[in-house]
Image (cartoon, rainbow, N blue to C red; front, top):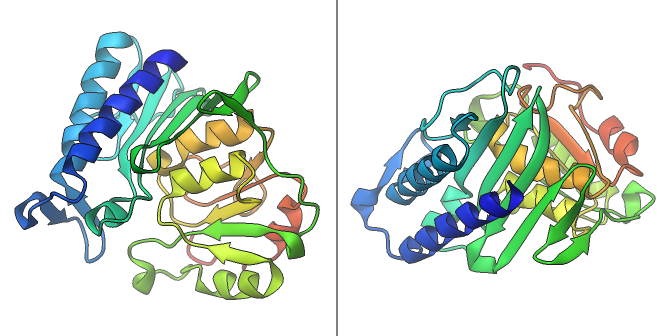
Length: 262
């Protein structure tokens, strides 16, 4: 399944690269004031959905742009959770930090993931219990022991101006208490960078399952830790996630404000 998922992700990545920097205005639409969708998103998702259904007809599918609608999180069968283009705003603006994310979930838990960033020529993949890789190279989370030495990442919801939990106070606090905070604009890529040790941790609020399923599987495969902001297990469908090397997890979580609107 990993080989097939890698092949499909690379095919979708090639499609995205063909459109990168070449979109017309008519190919860009808005789902919200800041939430963009492009013809490339939809074309990549159609390709992924077709290929997954051909390869795994017994599996379910949940995809960002609506190609599948299996929302039970793999309660009754394995479900592929797909983001055909994570980092659409970057893609539209010509910034190469975007990726294809595929995650396979069973009984609500990720069992394999692929995050492919075609413009960066980076491909991450893994399965919990079987290891994590960047290309052919094994990867693992960092061994940074304390938050003050950590490079961490975060992101913000598209409707940040209307949310009670806007993450801005967390961002300001962590800028002061870490080595640095990065905001790449792709949660899937952030998670892959945690898995590979580039980032020591990542947190974000108001995420969707397709933002995290692929990257989360790779973090777990690389020896990392995942919880929701409260320290529980409701991170895949619950909307808020903390991912880390495990060593700084609780220290990071203690620095996040209590949730008001979630």
